Structures are given as structure tokens and as C-alpha cells.
Length: 233
Image 1 (tube, rainbow, N blue to C red):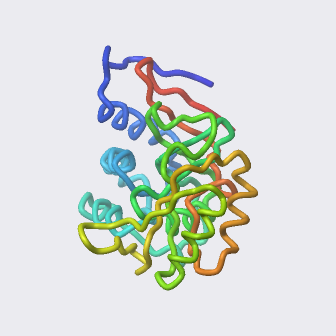
Image 2 (cartoon, helix red, strand yellow; image 1 turned 120 degrees about the horizontal axis):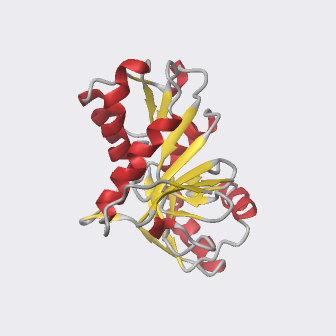
């Protein structure tokens, strides 16, 4: 683990996000397509990426929102099917443990995030120190589901001790970029992320579970009041 310097005395969470977003530029391979995730921390990375946009051919994005931000800054975006490999994928996390396993999906883009991560050689997670946990499950677990299966999947989580709720936007369910719904599951302690991801992924109607164990982070740039800590897994 290494640590950077030159940090404000009492950085805000927004400043920590900016810090790790800029630090992630060191992992972008010049001349290669870069995978870009979704969320407020990734937005800081996208803004920083604009400074070196002429050094990369472009990006593969995990969401409509990130695609729009990238293109607004003059960065070309291609569909994942048009790019055979990605040297690096930069994304945030809702939680990350000491093995690089994560919970993701707070921004509703977990399915596309997992797809882009799967075609990348290196996953760099950027996060502030509040996202580091000893065991996954403190943050609600997002699960993208086919709508007709949502009630049954909620019962299956109840059998595991979890409380699942349909994510809402006002009086309507949140609809993902893939046209599906999201469940947020609380009350779980995920001590075996690989086994849990494999189990839930097999439930009929589950599109993607927000545990990233098979596509775990290789590196985490963690923003702390003392600087950016680099964790390698």
C-alpha cells in the first residue's frame, strides 16, 4: 500500500472524489481504449480524462449518463461490441472489502458495469475511505431483475435473511438503461462473495447481482484525509 501527499487539511467528500479521480489518470494506457464506469466519483475521473483526451482513441462507457458526459467533453465513445479489449476499467464502488470484492449498483448501472469490467484487463476502483468495509453488506445490495420475477426474488432474499425493496423514483419503479427494475436488499452479511454471486446469479429473473467478486478490483485508489492510498489485491 502506498500513499500520496498534498491533501487539504480537512478534505470534503467531494474533494476526496476529485483526488482519486485525478489519481486514476496514472492507470490510463495511452493509445488504448479505456473503460469508464458510472457515478459521482467516476464523473470526477471523466472530467480529468478530458485533459488527456488526445492521448486515447476513446472510451467504452457503462451507462447513458457517462456516455453523455464523455461526449460533451469531446471524448469518443464506442459500444462494447466494437472494442475487443480494454487495458483498464475505472469505476467506483458502494463498498469494497480487503480482497477487492465490491458491492456496486447504487447508480443503477451494475449490469453494464459488469460487462465492461469483464472485457478489461485491469479494474481500478476509485472510492473515498467511507466505502472500505470489513464485510460486504452494510450498503444495500442492488439487484437488477426482470419485472415479472421481482416478487419471487424478494421472497428468496427473505429466506436468506434479507429485506428487499423495489427501487422507486416517486411513485414509479426505477427503470435501468436495460429496461429492467432494481431491488435493493438490506440485512445481508456477505462473507462469501464468490459463492453468493454465483448462487444469486442463477435465480431465474435475476439479470445481475451487484456483488462484484468474479470481476473484482485489482487496484483501489482510496481517498483519505492523509492522501490517496493505493490498495492492490
